[in-house]
Length: 140
Image 1 (cartoon, one colour):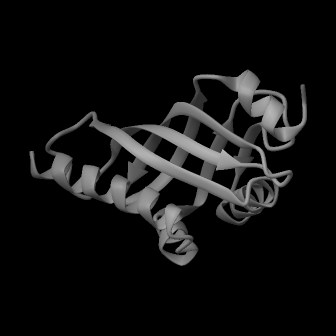
Image 2 (image 1 turned 135 degrees about the vertical axis):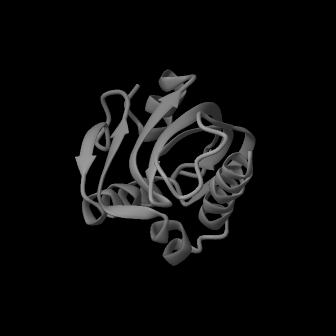
Image 3 (image 1 turned 60 degrees about the horizontal axis):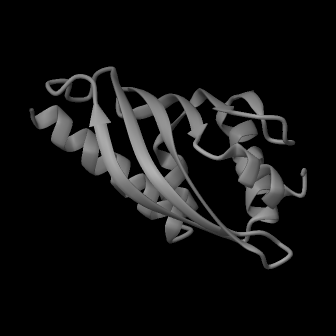
């Protein structure tokens, strides 16, 4: 049970760090050899390997979307007893974002995160309305 409490707190803290643009704290939660998978057919889609490459992917996102504010709706943990071990975490969220043309958008989704030793070793995004995201990227 304590493992689930810690994992939920950490997941919320990481999303809060993103919203505050506290990127050193955000990236501190990622392992150096992690993988990141983003859906669809835009420039950041596909699987990215390695923390530095994932940082570059997120920098591209921030260039397209100067405002990206997450609201964490819920956090799910697969092993309620894992403390510092391997665990799977799913974060359900809403995202309010503005593209560089100043248009506002909203979508929902979930991030599935595999954690080992307190660091994300993989993360995969699931977007509820990818067509809206494509429009926001200018890929109608």
